[in-house]
Image 1 (tube, one colour):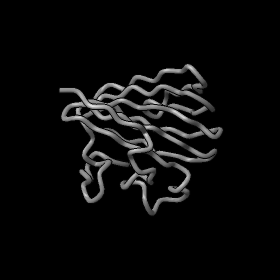
Image 2 (cartoon, rainbow, N blue to C red; image 1 turned 45 degrees about the vertical axis):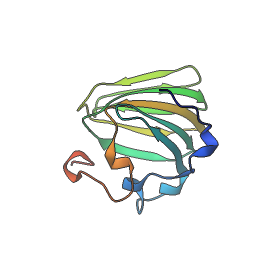
Image 3 (tube, rainbow, N blue to C red; image 1 turned 135 degrees about the vertical axis):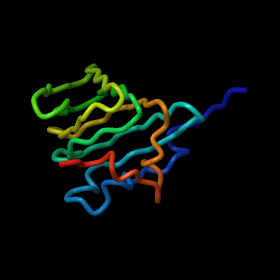
Length: 128
């Protein structure tokens, strides 16, 4: 059986694992999930930043509006604008800096439980 939703059905909120970091409120998301996939609507203000991190989920990000600096590891980066697609394999260090106000959609599999309040796997995030 399938389901139908509207993005407005899901609350716009900060990402739990970024709370308390500088400018964390510049990155707001709406998250919806099935049992195997998760989709996130991203609304980022210029200057929003997610440090290098890694996780089990593979992800694909589609830039709708604005620009972001997508980083894979410490040595590879690219500015992506509208129509840009960023594919990050599982367990690959990556981060992002939003260089303009940006709207994007991210799809990940398996779901990232760390995006839900109160659940974080510390060893997967922000390793030095």
